[in-house]
Image (cartoon, one colour):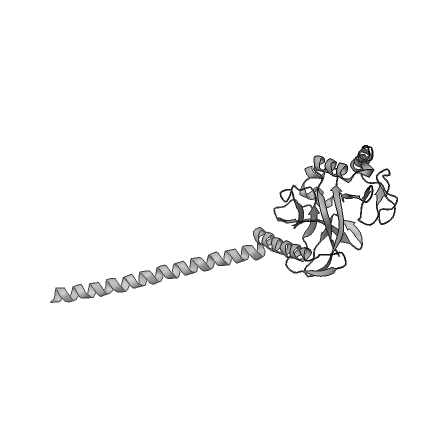
Length: 255
């Protein structure tokens, strides 16, 4: 009888030990999950990947707002809410977004760090500040941006920008636009247009200035093609051959 009672006592102790072990395992798992969630949340809000996710979210929201613009009579306001002191810039080369126009942001002005984010856009995005063209602007949060659309169908040229790195694109050179309006014209701002037999800007913020050398060379080359001013298709074919992208309208972000 004593042996039987001892066996029953051991059995109860074993069951109690088993329950405690299960509870301990569950507790350890819960703590592990909490630690993982804590690290993930810290990384989201404080780490590089968190900053990138926030930047990607902001760019997606910007792109959605841009897509809501259907004519050049509409202007909408957009409030930056998530990223602070990031550089907003745009890319026309197609390298950063798989051949598409691209809206990008990076945490440092040189864009040399790992914190970068890009999103493809269906139209080129022109960035402006205080009424002037910019390659990039520094975002604040909160910060109000104005968004509008130019219905001009244009081709963008930027003299070899395809080979440049992020930081050069961010600092670098504002593209010029070409369009066909009875004849081929070029311009720096979608407002002032010059015939392709001239390489000096007339009117606007760049009045009296000449574009960088590679742009001047391309304008001159373009102007010498036989009958180019009478043919939209001839010019379009040349742009396609040289990898210059057409934009069916241009989104404008200005501050």
